[in-house]
Amino acid sequence: MDLMYAHPFGARGIGLIASFTGAAVFALVAGVAVLSGKRLFSDTGTSRTVNLVLATLSMYTLAFCVFAAVGRTCIGLFAAHASRYSSYLELGVLSLYLCALAAPTRAGGPPRQSSC
Image (tube, rainbow, N blue to C red; front, side, top):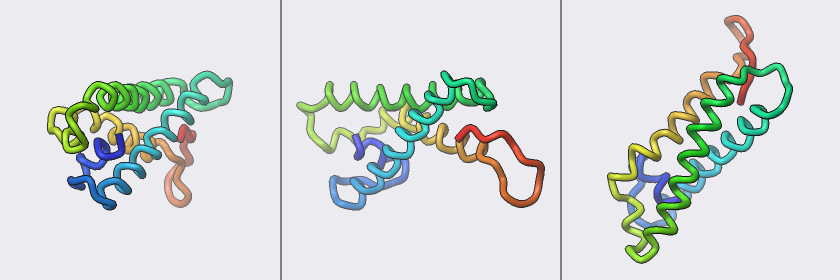
């Protein structure tokens, strides 16, 4: 699954760089999924809409990767870089981007409610 997440960032192959890049993105997307899912069902003051969008995007991408990895094991590791997976994986990258936008700012501008 980590090789699938490396493809949107241009890291191809089955080497150490592609594995590390994909594992880092996979960990970030999983973290966003867990954090936004937890905040979605808790009664904190954060926006439920933002958490719903982040949880939906990140959990869908994680579920797709799990099912694609299990279903495509007979093809081999190089099949993880197929371009047909890119649009589904970019939803996970979009969840990371939206999570970064929802993060509170430190200096300059009004404080926002944090959801990530």
